[in-house]
Length: 425
Image (tube, rainbow, N blue to C red; front, top):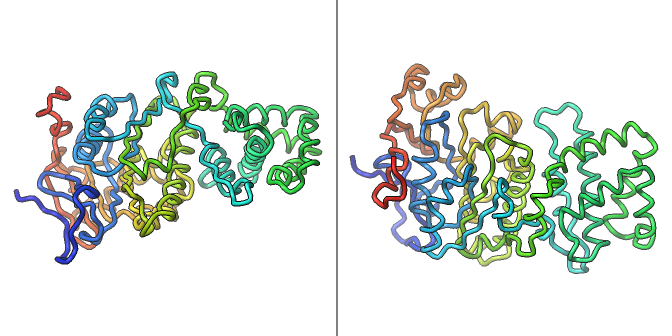
């Protein structure tokens, strides 16, 4: 079977080889990553139920041939063990954020990504983005007031830490301590003097807003309780290895030089999901800003975000349905890996989920048991649902935007590593 490369006739354009690579989606089916050649965006939606080989077939194939920077969630650290050495030898800067064994992790300080305005004041949208990522409004929530109020309380603690405390205290540990001080009986007294002396600050405005609920004990206590539950992940002493590390990840640098970020998390404990969500949200924000400040409005080095179990809490990115529509021109792209459409709907509402799917010009289907997912693939492939649900395990459907679906042979999981003796099957 000859290889099928997705290209279009533009003979005057030559792709810089060091900038763009290619992805092998199935045996004989490749996707070139230069969008000027393909006319497609580089966002890929990978759908496959548990055990179908999404990691061993797709992710490993991508990492084997990658030329961009990459950010990926690495449950159990398997991918780090397989690829970190190889990528380092190719000149990649290797970053490991380990939320299961924090003492082995590099640092991550969310407050370091908050930029300053020309007058030295903090940039409010950055502060709000952190608070909203920590305390997101749940999908389908009928009363968003509580989550939004909790986010405002967290936003005040962040703003106060950045405006009132010395630089060495600009971290989430300080934010947590300030929050706990504030919610105590008469805890607001600790902040009053600084607030009065600095009336034209973000902290002062947010302080007034949060104080408005304090006379109502029940409302204030409920809001504080929600905020505390969202901040709970920052209260673990083990994680201070990450948050108080003097050497923290420079998010924008991921788009300046070839970098591989491995985010190690647990697949059974989800109390750190908000941290992973925050990292993804801030990283995307920082990369877009870096691209906008770069020549031609694109990153010096493209960035590929591999979002495994996307739609699960740990992969949630605030406003991703809006951002995915605009990142192509900045040379940022994503592989969204889900088990079914219903998994995506657990974290994003129907319209947001539809927008995300519609912004993936390539779909790799590896099998499922979900009727709704099977129905969508059946429509795209002009097959019956039975054909889709009974698809052989060694086959995949590859669907490119504007082209007919093709049934192809699946890449045997981890087969691309056998020749290097990196893994035994």
